[in-house]
Image 1 (cartoon, protein in one colour):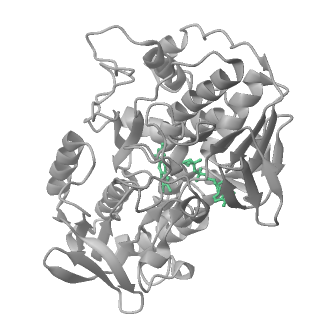
Image 2: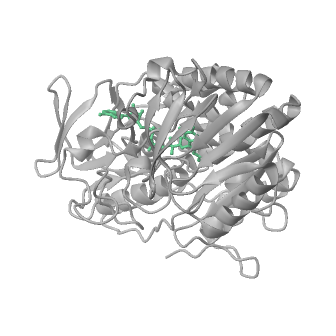
Length: 449
Ligand SMILES: Cc1cc2nc3c(=O)[nH]c(=O)nc-3n(C[C@H](O)[C@H](O)[C@H](O)COP(=O)(O)OP(=O)(O)OC[C@H]3O[C@@H](n4cnc5c(N)ncnc54)[C@H](O)[C@@H]3O)c2cc1C
């Protein structure tokens, strides 16, 4: 198990690498000094004819393809994904905040494909780990020696009765998760609310979700827009928490509670959205005391999330425990290797591991899974371990954020001890979110970070 770095202990190699990676962006003055740390030597390439299939060509799939292509000579790498556009999803919050244009988040999947890898622009319709093959929607059978499942997750909007994604941006309903256009339409609806005031409703679904900080960020951002327009006094802000806490890491949850208190955000615990009446502007929540109908003038709908259907219908999900119901993949939390099918790995949002479900966790998961896969090919087993590292630049107002980094054990990890304190609202953390993260992310896709 790789221990997170504590200020009084020497940095582990993985910590040094993390700081070098963040610093290499060159946007933080101190980071420039850290960036001068020499780069580790490029790993040797290994000759192989292994057939490696990567199901899903989003953040995790493209990162895996590039890392494998540069480490292996002769491997037949096939990425399967029908989506032509690549979406930089962490940017959706910035589009919905009105500070980045919609196209800031859109690029092209094929542009990140490594030389020699094949892209099959189809949906994976079936995964057969016993037969070591996947089948595409058109019936193409693709056999593999190794499979990396990187299919992300499914936004289950149908899990909210009355919800209609075609109406995002209309009549006070926003939903930043649906895509770049939805994020932009959400800004238009939120902006109208910030001009007029009224009742704003925020919250998150029960169960696992990607970027659990995003619902909180958008609450803070809306509060700030109201204040900047002199309309905070005309608005109520309600945050519907799915449980008793506001965030999975207790100390962060408490900090957010204090900030919400300070900003006048009213928190409702144990409220899970079940239905919405888009015409009457009423959202219905289940609570321990029964249902609660909450009128709104603006709402940010975040749907329940689960593993993609093709994974749920395969033998790959957990069969018991907290990750079974929504079909998350049964992988070892330290190696990302499937527990029953050792030549199958699960990375990114689809992985049934605690924490994670961020691009930042993709950054630390994929190299570990790739190292183990290469270890299988070369016969030299890898000792690489993923310790649950996740980070979230939690925007608390326009111009400030808290850079929160943590691991499986809820330890707060610090990439810049003494410079960026995790629970402080800082301009420098805002700069990271708004300027540094996208180039870092794109570099990750290309296997260079
Ligand atoms: C609003 C929002 C804000 C976020 N903010 C942050 C943040 O601040 N920091 C952070 O680190 N992370 C953030 N994230 C999370 C981050 O974007 C995801 O965790 C990351 O993209 C996960 O990568 P992935 O490869 O697992 O999934 P994705 O990048 O979603 O890729 C999954 C791919 O699988 C493909 N696919 C799905 N089904 C099939 C199929 N049947 N066949 C073939 N292909 C298929 C899809 O087309 C897609 O290309 C945010 C996400 C959102 C939505």
